[in-house]
Image (cartoon, rainbow, N blue to C red):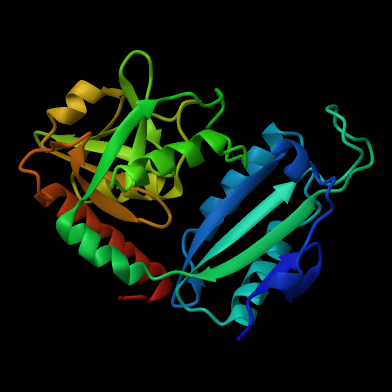
Length: 288
């Protein structure tokens, strides 16, 4: 079955999908995106993704002439047309195309792009059993990373640095030594049974997996603190982990080459992973 994309009202073969060379998403990264998991052909946490997209569009003053219901209908049509049961839905909304000029164009109409690609979530089982490693880097990004914009060059370079060192992820650390988040994930540590993650602010993306894990953990009687934690704390933590749409949860067993706790996945990460799996099954019927 050929890969299909949606571009401004049309579902077309991915190889034929295109936008104007003067689209502001290309020229200025004047655009937002969302990445949603598909399990058993069903979208996970769809209302939360749409709410975050709408918040970002409002913050950037981008008018999006489509209702939530219409966007959901188009997304599900594209998923069905691609025929993947385990996949990732990518959504991008740009301010549209216009003559290249910094001020907002008066007549531009938002561009909507969506793609679906197969994703093997079962691969995460092995990583949950062994754990993964992260490196740390200075946080050189702009100051509104809470908006999911496509201006991701610092994230791309950080991820490449991680891969070059044989690590799964890079964590961004402030000048004050505070761990903000990963290049494409949210960061967590566990100390004395308490789960700790950076509070919502302009320093981190309000991750959907982050939001869900906090709710699941608290409902299961676990203590979660939303507060800044330092790299020094992370190195002394009992456990560490990361979350994202595509992870969805992975134990971190080494930071900059130093073992975290015992150097193996711990009991809290294992308990949380089971909670996440249960929620995926509840929403989509997927059991892996």
